[in-house]
Image (cartoon, rainbow, N blue to C red):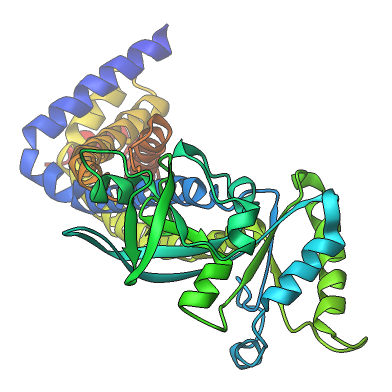
Length: 406
């Protein structure tokens, strides 16, 4: 109880000292405010970016393997990748036949364009060439109508499925089922619309139109950039299935033994690794700036506390003459330093909160209780470290010399 009373009394003295020296305390905490403000925003932004990225790549599927010409990571030299042959429709079909019923195979291609209905036009639309199995592989949910059928894909029928936002743009007051729209000036009949999907790496998946990939080849491009997507149904066996698919694709592509693959096999983990490296670089840069600001702030706090000790030398002498122990004097100045820094931490959080509200327009960023607790803990820790030497000096003062000081 005696120690607890010391804590309460020292806290009262610290708050009184801050109140008496408002300007000095304010200037001393500027470095702390800047450091904690930067660290809080950095942690909040990285957390929000991580949530947005995880929500975004969920569209890929944790159990889906993608076979395509390009690699998702930076491991391969770009000039070698650029020289590879595109994956053809015949090769995609052969791989699907070899895989059989052990997994669900989709092959698809994408491009940009415009979609029109009467006097309504939507630009920057994602045009996706899919097959019937793409709905399962891509995790698409039908809102109205149906998805593409195998007969429509094989027969190159001019039918399409509209994304949620695109359907609302073109048909705000009525159902678009059965209507004929123009996709890059080619007529397609709407057979279905999708439920809302969200964004994938800054691409709005709800602003897409899905057509048979065979029709895309017939209407828009004879040499599409095809991607084969294989849904394994078991994320735990992803590596094993990925290696098996690699050997099947080598056979389909006619790659000789000993030659390098002329295609890439990708999955969600590649993007997660890239994002982890990206956030590590940002975090390191943020910690460097934060550390520099806290160092400057800590030096300012240390100087203020040395001045405070000098000004209150007689007070220290009186307290020691009345029986105050070194521990009590040490604790008094440590608490004063910690209180000044804690007030700076609170001010930094108060400044960071409205900024995070602005950030929420782009990222799901919020100052979580854990981030706030860490910020205040860093503030208090900086105060204790910066105030230790002045507090130690105060605790070691000789009471006779302290009483003689002017």
